[in-house]
Length: 353
Image 1 (cartoon, rainbow, N blue to C red):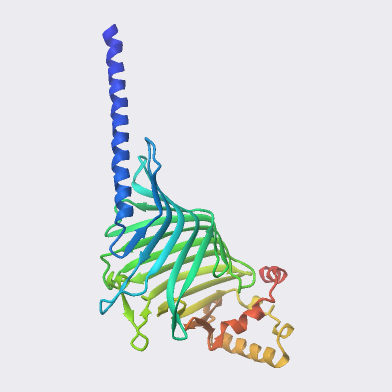
Image 2: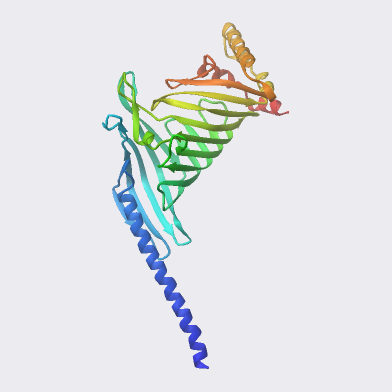
């Protein structure tokens, strides 16, 4: 009888020891992986930090970095280094847990900054963007090469430089270092429940966007160079889709960013507007423009509408970006925005009826 009870006890003790031993081994290997990760991030970027501290437990391996700085320096075709792009964060938490053994959880706490070099009026300068708000959660695979996918989310984020605010952000980043000319080396897709843009009246809702950078990987590592100025031209970017709801309208954009510098991109796009006619009828440009300018605006708007493809109830207009300025047809968008600011929420109710 004693032997009958002793065997299950020995078996249970063996299972406990096996689980505990596996947890200890998993934590040790995961901690070593995180240490190697921050020491050798990639051949394109270098990472530095003010302090590093292990913060794991028996059931998780964790690493906390304070004062993080990541510097990425692509090269020119002649081999000379381009200007460095820098990312900074106050606090970054990295952790791996046994129930997701092939996934790394990264939490970005506090304000984050991105510094991009650019040229203005022949003088080189740097543009600083600061992202603040709730922590950004990122999940990416342990085996990230040659291809991988990372998911990210944040309840609220605010871009200080531009004043753009986003609520409930979710998205993913894809990469493929073996991409050829028929594939994408980078991809980005995201959705935002609500977005506020300072220059745009009222907020945008149900924002969804997907971008991709054509291969090969060399385009990411080696930048083109402008012959006249010798400045770097950023790789091209495809806008596969960008859509949003605004004031009863369903807006969609597709297009191609063809290059340009950090703050003066060049590209061509198509803007698709659904249910547009009731909205246009609410515009009253004469309320803020002098009579001659109001008449000129109406003529310009009617000309764009007549040129737009209205098949299937959709209005399709061309958008172009030249040296950082956006044009709708041949009219600068900044001259049209003041008129759209007249459309108040009350008008949106009329549009939806």
